[in-house]
Length: 331
Image 1 (cartoon, rainbow, N blue to C red):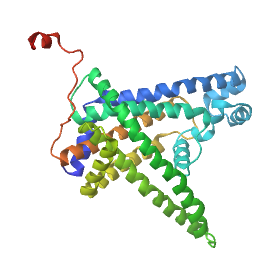
Image 2 (cartoon, rainbow, N blue to C red; image 1 turned 30 degrees about the vertical axis):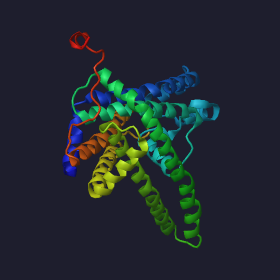
Image 3 (cartoon, rainbow, N blue to C red; image 1 turned 120 degrees about the horizontal axis):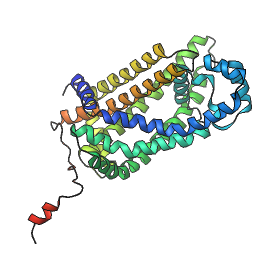
Image 4 (cartoon, helix red, strand yellow; image 1 turned 45 degrees about the vertical axis):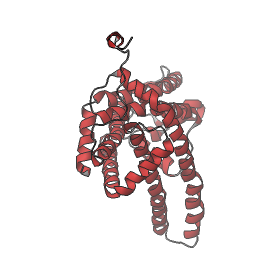
């Protein structure tokens, strides 16, 4: 299967299973809802029926905002101007690239989202690989079947990502960067050196991300129980199909950049009204679709290259089993 064909096939698989995107977006929304409620309570307590409340309703009142941040704590301390519009994307990318600390107050929501995603991913890949309706019972059966296996895979992935975001990142930006810029007097030169180090950090990060993606796909499609075996099988596939695997990953990454570009153009700057919220939710929906597109297109490429499109080793469970099966069976 050609790379473009796999990309388009992935989009079609997502189109034929729209409830996957809706379910993942709703899951993200519900996880964030308790924190949003706590923040709303703090804002209401601060504004009350004051003049600042009427000013905030028509726009951003930075005087009140600074006063609020000076007096608040907990989830309220995360309510900074950088969360509005496209600034939130820049803030998140900066935190990711520079390994910034996640605020403790939202760490629980982040961990919850990771656990829920770990549970759902087996059912998601199973549905995308079969490319036909399977029913809720079969979907959640696949989730339950693979959650333990993906937990073991997650332990391996966590160790790899710890090494990348920990020792490797510190070596690049604490040791190498300081050594290369020790005698640099031109700021632009230092900037390009840092960009080069970001690339050096991104290359192994993207490789291992792709390696674990195909490990999940091979585990689901081939019903593998050994996650070490799934990682080895993933490596063999990437080694044999390096151009196709990397090209498809690059196209999907480009799609993500297009979504970011859309948000940059559409997000209202310095506004926190209802339209800004709607555009923000649309951006989250598009990010969910991109996540699904990575899984769907990579699954399509793997199945197409091994000439078993639509094949999944694990049979669809029938729950409950038909009573008629017992009637015709041996007594």
